[in-house]
Image (cartoon, rainbow, N blue to C red):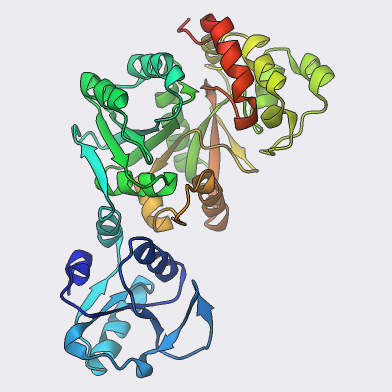
Length: 392
């Protein structure tokens, strides 16, 4: 058996993927993105179907020289023995079996810079940053204050190397990862691969203002739901005032629901880019200005119900998941573009398709600065009322 890197090192002139399922399609796409030549996707019987832009080939029609040919098996684990036997009967013995290790091998192949300060904590927090420098002082001050000491931090910049982020990371003892290609799914895949062996992964964007005990509350909600509910958990998320799913809970708790609806209309639960909570700049200002300070709000939710199950798509601006779920998903899809929002769509879709619950901690509140169309107005508000973002 060969490792993926051995297969791709150049010793084989012909590389085939065996298996046309989701894993095989993601591998095909990933290798093409990395400009690694792959001959095609093979199944035992010709079906005539086209997958990922290529026609599936029958094994009996593969005529490449066995000594120069390698196969990467991506079929389910319970079929590996049979597939290996089939390949060997056909004269092909250069084989790599796809798994979590090969997934990590694949996503350490792209070009990136990694300033490694991992401490082997077993839990890490990825921070996607690089484009909203005006927020960093307060965002990172909060992160430094409230992150538990047993969590490794890695700042991730997609498509940019920031000297300022590198400096901040160095001063804080955090790792810093930057990628040449601007793709948020690629950057995260590389980070997950580099932190292979870690059990827990928090992920936050550079416009998330964390609060006291928010990390611990997410972990507690996740573990409690996993241990005592009838659900298998996919991700855990906090309450966020500027969020299509949890803003109603926030408004009811703070007594601002009627005021909000008078200004912006009926509250509809769920992420929707055309809803006021995501589209209207004044809606974002309302949630930051009319509602209590984010730290005060967080303290209002420390008692009571531990978690709720989300039944719609949730924003993943800040979340907690297990590394094994990324492995189960076979990493995030990388299209070749920036893939903005694609990670959220895929992750929420994977939760639904794999029957994994999205758990909303009811004891933790974090602040989300703005959605895209609200940003310019919120920049102005940020300058006018900086105290709304300071630690209180």
